[in-house]
Image (cartoon, rainbow, N blue to C red; front, side, top):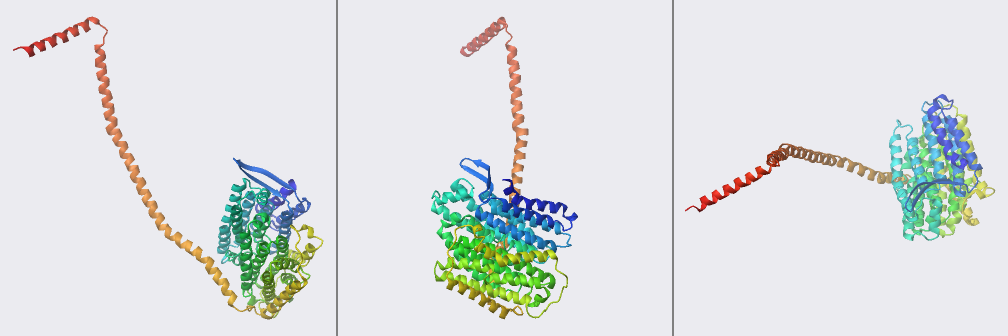
Length: 616
């Protein structure tokens, strides 16, 4: 149906128009992207759940590739989260990019990203999902490296592109295996075949593990985590959109979309849990020692996504989807508030910030609301989603429950430290006194409001929007323990945060250095191998050229021999035979008396010869 197709197309059309005509518009094309995404959000509200559109793209034998969109409860819910956050971030971006001559390119790339992300979420075909997945990766590369002249921007963009591509190979192989097993790329057909037992268990496990590799790369889970903190060199709207609600959430969404496949593969579910658990704890510890405000939020994103993976690995799909939406609200708020601070201070270094609550009360209030939501303080949004994850974890033993409580404690610690260093205490850096654009304030306030009330709404009156069956609530004692852990973490962070000192000491920073070295080593080895292969390739090329030259020379020599030898000999023989034939033809004149005379002459000559031989 038309409304369903318009959802991803509107931002894409806005992107093309912004690039073509942005220089002639007052906001550089930003108004087009805001309007396009807002209309997509309206279309999502109007499209009924269950609406689909599918066309056959390619058929060969028993294989059928389809492309299409579907508004299932899950896809519609996640698409609304993506579009809602994108509207607020694009509005913020209008002011953030104000007066810059490269605004049209920025908004074109932003619209491209949003359109591709909406296509990814709504796709009901693995082929279309993969195509949109790759388009999201390309758009993120362009946005992270938008300020390509800035130090580290080009390297960060390339690092993000290459590390996520490594995981994407697994996704490609996974959906090709699904095509081979089912004969179609339709997502619902795959789920039905798996649930009906028509796909061998080994194939299901292989499929799930391959697709998990793609999810880990996009969601910056170990060992693919190092690209996300480096990507903070991009503009603040890019960090707020890509690294809170959209690109990094695509991995979690993929597992949710293929829930039937993963549920039938216990090994993949175990891998989900353990990778998510290790990533969540690792990233949270690193965030407690990170000295850059946006990098603290980046490591926080890795940790929060790891917590969603833990919930998925324990079978808590609804809890993971709940936390995905809530995390999108409070994390994008934190990024936008941090961007306002950076614009005013000219730096993101925690040891150079401080006292901005008085200078930027709106940004400070928004950051405070989002930080309390991240720490799971009731009644803010994070409390409700953390309760759902705690409830799922408690059903699998005290160890899983203790893990989630530890993550809440660490979350409160690193966000309390970051907020204290940036907004409380004495003002240490007085650079910049300009006024924040009203569009930046509007986008930040809208998301801060969502960070405050979205969890309460989804836990109550809007609970029907959440996909999957409801999980039982957490016990009161466990809920209180989670609240206490969040408050304790906030206290530790506030106490240790003044001046930007590491909350738990400097040792977690060495974890990040170790990860960076471990992930850089394969790239360095590959580069060295490529450099060593260069001379070998040149030598092989020279040898091939020599062989080709010798072959060419031999061919030319054979041609000359043929022309000057065999051809002339053959022509001479043919001429001699022709001449002989002409002479013989002269003897065949048709005169009988001549033939008789010739026979008489031969006979006479033979008799004479015989007489001479017999003469004594």
